[in-house]
Image 1 (cartoon, rainbow over the protein chains, first blue to last red):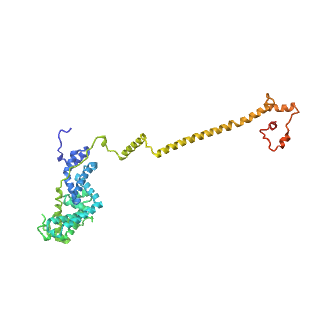
Image 2: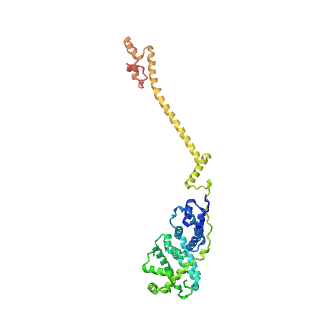
Image 3: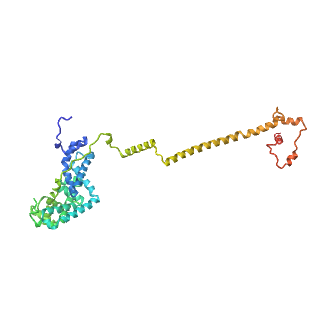
Length: 199
Length: 203
């Protein structure tokens, strides 16, 4: 019997996972959920074009997978890359379903109607348009774009998560940005210098 | 599309991620202008900058509580393979059928068939037994007994085989039956039934 209770919030993700593997420690699982649920939910929402219900389901599913497949976790590796690899694979599987593709196209078309050219001088409208362009990217480019610019992962971390080389990540990121920029060419910020001033 | 970046693309990408166009030194500005235009560079920078705050509203959504099914130690909640549960159901059904059989037309037909088979077997065995007994025991003893009776009428103390030659020696005048009548008789008599013929054959 332990004399002193361990402060679980100070333990690293990998230590928590090893506790979960060894003794099905519910406290460790709860702590991991507290640390990663928001990030993962945000990632799923971005990947599924703002579908919150589906993203909540996927969040539950991913933690069920963590519990069921905990023995597959290598404690020498980082937990976040493992969990985001699972998340990105789940998204990839979902993206392969033809139903999702048709629905997403319908959503994009619907959003297109909402954003008219006259409103594009507005910063919010530009954001909305950019969001549409991001959602139109294919799975690989979209994943890298979101992981880099929204989740703020480094190139090396993205390479670990997507299981490709750093060079491939760089390439995907470069072409994703270039593609979006090309599509937004007509809305060049040169017309409004205050609006597009960075930093 | 996923080919690795060239040297120029890689350098441009690094600059895009790090500096505004106005912050670039003259050499970098020259390089940027050789690859793209200033407006495109600024637009791409703006896209990258805006993308970082693009989904800020989505991140305000709070995740639901984690729902994990609690493990139960009770016997009813023990996980078991599907085949085992199917076997258990099948065993139960078989047991119930044995205890409470269902009376249908098919089952009565099966019972009748079994009965007929039993009857046939009994009849065949009985017939074979009867046939064997009659053939071996009845026919031959009847023939021998008739011969003995015929001889014993003339001389009951002597056997017919030993006595026949003596009868011929002791008396020369034996009354032979009238053969002419028998020879002319068109119907004739079987050797087996004729007493005289049997004497001649034995002699």
